[in-house]
Every structure is written in C-alpha cells, then in structure tokens.
Image (cartoon, rainbow, N blue to C red; front, side, top):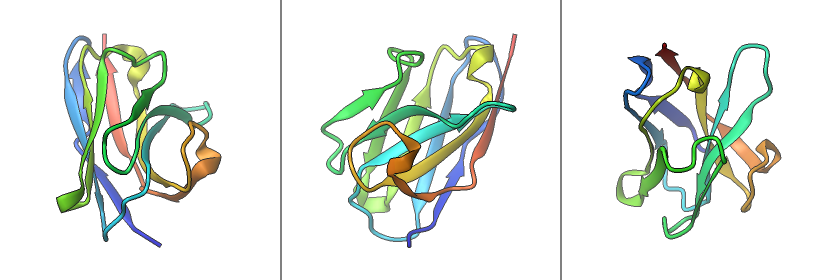
Length: 120
C-alpha cells in the first residue's frame, strides 16, 4: 500500500491562491484524486487526473479555478487553487484510485490531509 503525504495548506484571504502537493512513497501510475472534507460534512470530490496527466475532471464548484497536475518522475500530484472562496475551507486529502470516477469508494489509499482556510 502506498503512503501519501499532503502539504501546502494554510490560511489565505478570499481571492488568494494556494498550491497543494501530494507525494507518494513509491511509484504510482494510478489515477489520483483530490477530495475535501469540511467540518460536519461528508468527504467530497474535488478533482481527479489519470495516470499520464492527459485526462482530468473537476467538481463543478471548482471548475475554472482549480487545476490538478502530476509529475510522475517525482511521484507528486498537485492542486493549484486560485480565486479561493470561504466555502473552499476544508481539509484536503489526496487519494490513489482503483479506477476512474469521482466517488471516494474508488480510493484505496488516503493521505492524512492538509488544512485550507479561506477568510472572507
């Protein structure tokens, strides 16, 4: 089982940007995804990217503002977040998927997450 470690979260004002990173302990050419979980809410899909980086998908709430990318040479997946809103506040988790899709059910390995807080 691969280990995933997220970083890059923090406190930012509305309209600001952050870039999250997710480093895998080993080589993984799986589809990878970013999910987020706000207090009292279920974990929700944010973005996903296939093994080559050639195919991506986004939740409607982040489309046009967030960009997912990956660098397989250094086992890292990124989430560039621009034009952040207070409603983006959550713990962001990356996950390794067993197939293509937007459900957390497809994830077989999770990172512990990184906190993103957007102030108004």
